[in-house]
Length: 214
Image 1 (spheres, rainbow, N blue to C red):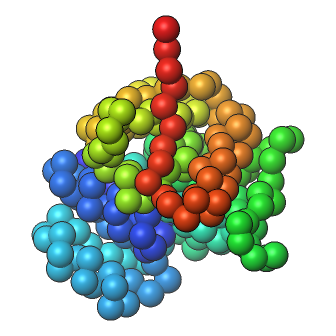
Image 2: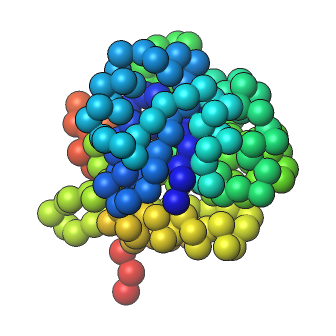
């Protein structure tokens, strides 16, 4: 499958390498696709890796990954061209984090809406699925923990789209918990804050969530 990634930071690069590891082709979109760190990423990941503008990455991808900062997501979508998202599965990794008052950040959306819901409104013809927002990039692909693999919680309105994302997550080594429609982002984005606050309190980032069942 062809994967377009919007966002050239650590999340985009780690997920891009993960997709390539499992045989997919990846184009990372950026405002500056020729920047040194992206060219190094392409060199490291071989002929299935490429870079381009936001619009080129969105047009390339059969599935599109949003790996932008929350505050930059709407602008990235505008630059990519909303028509390039129509009919596609959009895997949304974003969180609406506000760093204006320092760290740890706070959420600038929550309770009555979420960034996942806003993205679905901006892209009404796309199939948005929230995933990967509750763990650090170091553990996004093939997570290894002493207690076994953690769980990834997802949500979205389109069942076939969630099935596609579930297949990707399972490929990457994640059991999946589907919590329902995209409005579930109102709870997954604050769950990311639990992950973040624990990280700042303990100065460790090697943690993830597991749903225990009986």
